[in-house]
Structures are given as structure tokens and as C-alpha cells.
Amino acid sequence: MRVLILGGDGYLGWPTAMELQRSGHDVCVVDNYLRRKIAQATDSEALMDNPRLPERTEIFAAKTNMKILYEEGDCCDFDFLNGVFERFGPDAVVHYAEQPSAPYSMIGFHEARLTLTNNLNSTFALIWAVLKQNRNCHIIKLGTMGEYGTPNIDIEEGWIEINHKGRSERFLYPRQAGSLYHTTKVLDTDLLWFYVRTYGIQVTDLMQGPVYGLSTDSADLDVRLAPNFHYDDIFGTVVNRFLVQAVAGIPLTVYGRGGQVRGYLNLRDTIRCIELAVENPAKKGELRILNQFTETFSVNQLAERVQRVGRGLGLDVNIQHVDNPRKEMEEHYYNPVRHGLLDLGLKPHFMTDEVLAVMIEKILQYRERIVPSRILPRVRWK
Ligand code: USQ
Image 1 (spheres, rainbow, N blue to C red):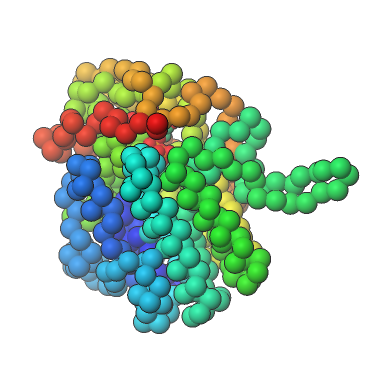
Image 2: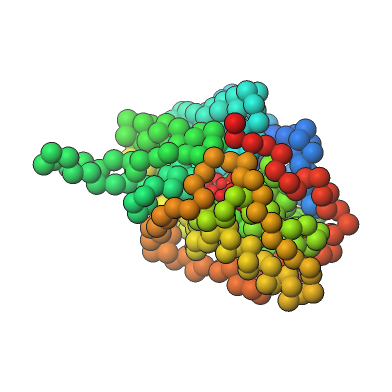
């Protein structure tokens, strides 16, 4: 299939592009390097140097003899995106082209507005490119488990049947996000649902939990093909951060009491989920929502695991409960369903001690590059 990846320079976008190309699809990536610009502006650069798309695609071609096409530009710009559609003619589009950081979206007015306009406008331009160019093009949109928040009832897979005064109807599951970033994903879902039910387009919305990992078959071919591995408080996800903190000898930053539970998944599983969605499209006129995580942990459980594995490797790993910079429940019920991707054939890579140890060994090679001032939380929800 011809697969267009919006946000193809990102932590998830670039590894997805490489694996899809290697599994036989024709891939084109699009990016305007917004995340790199924000990372530079907030002193939140990744652990390793990651070349931009022209160089990355060349290195990939030299290693594999396969060509990933790329386009540099802004996915919010409809004329640009429409032109990419005309040139490439995708069968499926994977939409990662969003400002992905919850803390960034909570810094202040300008950062909040950038998150809101970028995330909604990129989704809107994509919907219109599909409407104008090819209504059979399958949109695979990255949503987030954070859309649901932490309700006191089980979290279903996108939809819920409500019985009210003797009648019933199926609705989008209630959403109550905990940051402006997560709220933009809720709005994206509503926008997509409107266009699905009105125009009959076909959409898969993947509700993803925090991802960890820095290894994939293709990324391991050359360090210059590695994903953008962030450990800062803005872009770093919690497991990646804890592993870097363990290596740097900085106590693991558990926010508040640490009873916050989330659904996590390995980077390799993110890519496999996308591949499964591409190869098993939603039906015409369907908004298919799949919960994308493989196991749940509290922050305390993650910290204890990283501490145990780090100590096993001879590192001095301590845990520190820091004042929670976010507004979130620190003890709560959490029971999300996750059948859809398993039914499609996902075989999870679980977070074993060995997986964590391999990551620590790799991070140790970059120990000198860790900048401690990027680690403690710099953004508060206030
Ligand atoms: N946390 C800590 N200490 C840290 C960092 C985080 O205790 O040093 C806690 C947070 O307070 C939160 C949990 O760990 O309760 C997860 O935080 P995170 O930073 O790993 O994840 P989050 O900000 O929610 O966002 C990440 C991605 C985002 C994706 C989301 C999925 O950056 O793009 O949408 O994970 S989810 O969280 O399920 O909504």
C-alpha cells in the first residue's frame, strides 16, 4: 500500500516509516520539524543527534536499498498537504503531525494556542485532502488514552451503550482530558466523527498510552536512524525519563504519591499496531477506535522496577516523590479494555527486566550527553 506518514520525523513517526517500508509498503513522510523547534526553544533536546529527513532517508537507503520519500512542510497548510496527496496518492495516512507534549501545552497562552491550532488544523486539513482527493483513503489517527482521563468506571474501546429512560443508543465514550494537549485529541476525535458520519470517510482512531523504547529492527541498523529519544520534562515519557535518571544518578522523579496508573506500550508494539491498522482498514463510514497499550502500571511500580533493574546493573538508583506539577488523581480506579488490536493479531512485547536492562545499557553509552537541568519538572498546571 502507499502510506503517507504525517509527522514522519518524530519519536514514533520515523521508526514507523522505516518498518512499514521494510515490510513492503511504499512510504512517504511529511514533517515541518515543529517538535525540533519547540525542543530547542525549551532546552529539551533529545539524547542522541537525529539527522533531518533528507539525511535520514539517505542513510536508510544506504543500509537497506529502499527509498522512503519525504516532503518538508506544514500539514496545517491545506494547499501543501493537498499537493502531497496529488503527488503521492496514498491509500492510507498515518497522522502523527501534532504537538505531542502535555507539559508544553500548559506553559502559557502562546504554547496553548500553538497546540490547539496545530493539532486541530492538521487534522482538519487532512480530512479535506481526503475529501477532495480520495474518499477511500484510510485515515489512521493517533489519539491518546488520556482522552478518557481516569473515570471511576471501566474504560471501553471508544464507544459506550447508554440506556436512558428505557431507550438506548451507542455514543462516544465520555472524555475528560487532563491537559490541553490531551483535550486537542478529544476535539480531533469529535471532528473526525462528524466527517465520518456525514461524508462516510473511513477512520481508525488509536487511543495510545505512553510509549517507551529506543530500539527497533531498523533503528538498530545505524545510530543515526535512532528515534528522537527524549528524557526532558517536556517531551520525555515517564519510563524513558526514569531510565535516563537511573543512568545519570538522579533520583527517579515520581510525581506526587505515584498511584497514577496508565497503559504503556513498547515502541515496537506502537509500530506493529499501526501496521495492523494499515493492513486491516476501517470500513467506509466507520470511526473505529482501538485502545493501544499492552499493560498497565502505576508510576510507583515503574519506579520500583527501574530501581531494581538499575541496581542489578550496579547503578545507584533512588526514588524521590516530587511535588506533582500536574493536576491529576494520584490514587484512582483504572480498568481500560483492550481487545481490538489483540484481535487483529498484536503479540505484545512486555516490559520485562531484560527489556529495561537493554535500554539502560544503551543509554549508558550516551551518559555524558545527559543534561541534568532538563530533568526536574519545569512546567506546572496552574
Ligand atoms: N510522571 C511522573 N514522573 C515523571 C513523568 C511523569 O510521575 O517524571 C507521571 C505523570 O504525572 C503521569 C504519568 O507519569 O501520571 C505519565 O506521564 P507521561 O509524561 O509519560 O505521559 P503523558 O504526559 O500523559 O503523555 C504521554 C505522551 C503523549 C501521549 C500520552 C498517552 O507524551 O503524547 O498521548 O503519553 S496517555 O498518558 O495515556 O494519555
